[in-house]
Image 1 (cartoon, rainbow, N blue to C red):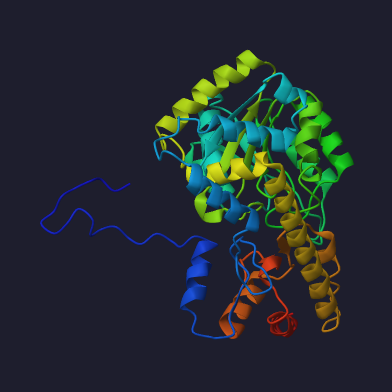
Image 2 (tube, rainbow, N blue to C red):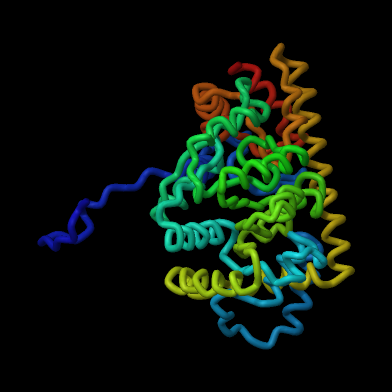
Length: 405
């Protein structure tokens, strides 16, 4: 570690550039690529057929109402808007679920899902110093860094089968045999990032009982609610854990399902055994927030609250989400058809995966070749953002992939 030392030149001359982010760095490289036919399948944002990340109509309407009615830009409380927290709980658990009716959940508003994960990490470190965080291999590239930044030890469990296209549920449980009681198990609620490979409903139920037997604390990253089957269906895993009587932590986000990427609208929820425990947890979580970002941004959460609590806006939102899901599924089917017409490799697994991402099976060498020779940008592990594909670029994309296979 370098010590802070003033010289005749500068405090900072010795500082070397940090390596670029594994995903966002690729996005910068894409922007600097002069090829007019370049294709970007890296960053996890939804794009429509025209390659645009749209503002949803329900958000435009909510923003108009907010501008007309908002009276202050004052700070929110440390935990954020109470109305927003209630809306988040109702969306995840349902208004009549015992978690909600018995006030067993403590929810705080956070700057995106990433902010929620970091606050969860800080809380875990303070309360369970020896806990290790187990995450799937592979997982979202930022997961290990977030928990390491909180001072936690991270471990990996088996997730994919030998073909890297499906789930190895037995292998997952076997690799977690080294977990200790009190360890944290990080799970993806749906639309697993980066693979698109999810648990079935039956596997979630089995997993809940298995987690109980191992005395693990489940932490669910719920970033894509509504992007697989629907808003209710996509939290079946969270509900299976809660219905099994487990204490659960949930980090959620409206970046994807409300298109509020740049507004940074997220939440962290802890489900406890009773209301008094939830209140105590909230007090400690608030202390983690206070020394981090003090209080969350107001605007995006206000928009989400309007949409979730207005029946007409909510209906419009669900219609828009349905259209997004349909487009993603159509692109998956088209990609499989186009690839299977060009190569002997069977790409049908892409239709069995869920959400925006797919683990393509491309090797790091093939990914480099696609970038260097064809200006096609894919994350090094072979993850592609299916929503970045459209009818204008799919032909060139599939020709290029076939060329490097």
